Length: 179
Image (cartoon, rainbow, N blue to C red; front, side, top):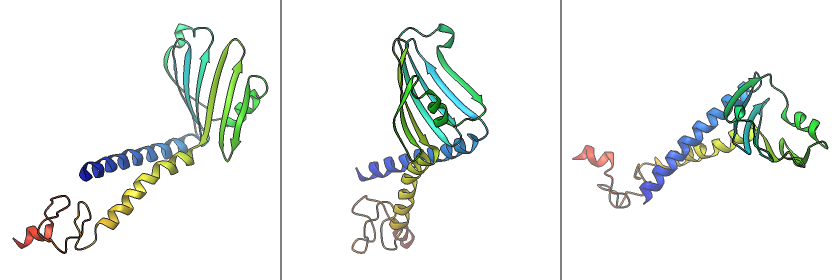
């Protein structure tokens, strides 16, 4: 069971590292071009916007069906604009900031008979920092595990049983070389 948990954690650390690298790449490119990825169904649309070091995720529920030419996945890149400034122009007309602090924001969109939605904003650095936590923990655990006289797989103390690890069953490299 411990080997499974170790492999699961290693896999999560790898995915987290890839997410961190992708976020940093999108963070840098967001200053040159705004990336807008959206999906529209019959009555619901989802959108991810990355611009000027900020990310926005929104869901809008439409009262009437969306025209069929806009259904499915859409991708567009335009000149970067500040996302909170775009939402600030909607404040009072169709939107309202529910929360806004430290680059994070929660915004509601509402027009009585047309649509109803929510939008979350966060800075790219926050996602990159969150995604970097698991690989950092993985590196710390790897450094702690490589102590002399301990199992390289699980970190168990092998002073009493130098030939085979009683915890995971692996044979240490020093035991292989001595035979």
